[in-house]
Amino acid sequence: MAPGSRLDPETRQLTRAIARAGSTGITAKQLAGRVRLAPDRIDHHLRSLAATRTILRHGRGLWSLAQYADHLGPSARSPAHYAEGFRRGFGVPLVPAPTEIQFGSNERLPVHRWWPYVQGFSAGWVESVLRRYGAGPGTVVLDPFCGSGTVPTVARALGARAIGTDLMPIAAFVARAKLTWDVDPTAFRTAVGRVLARRGAPRLPLPFLRETRRQFAPAVLGRLRTLRESVDAEPDTDLGTLLRLAFAGIL
Ligand SMILES: C[S@@+](CC[C@H](N)C(=O)[O-])C[C@H]1O[C@@H](n2cnc3c(N)ncnc32)[C@H](O)[C@@H]1O
Image 1: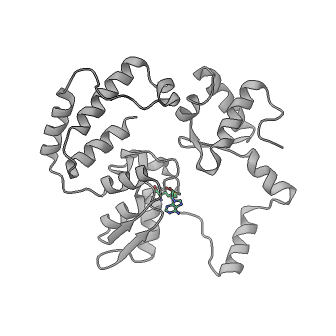
Image 2: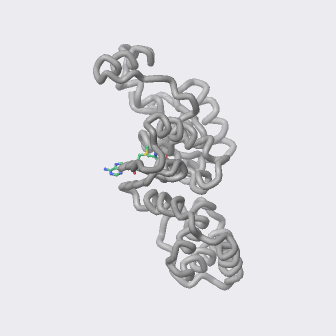
Image 3: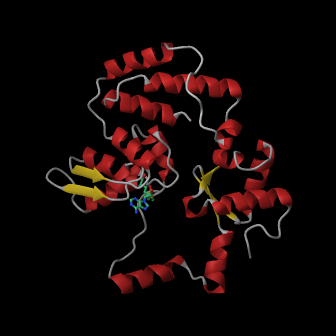
């Protein structure tokens, strides 16, 4: 069954937009930019879709479960069944994670909370895995799919040499910024003051993105553009990298 085919028009809009996001998931804020519904209607429908397990809600993320129902069908088994298959097939026991593995808890942690990433891992879980495999001084940790850089950031904190790469330029940028640890906090505060003090109308044209215009009121968008141009006026140093991440983090 295609996601949303037997639902009312409002719910169908929502389930289709969520299904289109695929396994990456979508946040409620992103969803609001993709459907023509008032926030209270969205909230109402999301609650009932989660209650009927049509969608999965976790932290800020939303995923369509309907698309997986088709794949699994009536042959779907319990998690223990798949864990046993994994152990037999690969010789690796699947153990319950000692902590939550999704990004949610990072929102309370310094550095990790700078850029919420729906796909991100929890720093606590990453630390438990890295410790289990002995990461620390004298070891190298490579994460070729590092996303927002949780693994390299935790690895560096444990004293390991950390290397990360990611296909998505914004994720690679965020990871690099989160590994920028040598900026003087006083110099950073001074630069923030400089950025906020620059005023005036934005000078550069905004690339036309329908979503951007839907998500921000014109006055807010104008202020954000001025702020962005002010951040861009700062040199491309480590300090400038942190300023750019701070700007990305408030959007
Ligand atoms: C589950 S996320 C990793 C999240 C990360 N552990 C964190 O905590 O932020 C998987 C990442 O793999 C990246 N990716 C997918 N295909 C890739 C490829 N071929 N090369 C490099 N990165 C890739 C995606 O952009 C995504 O950021």
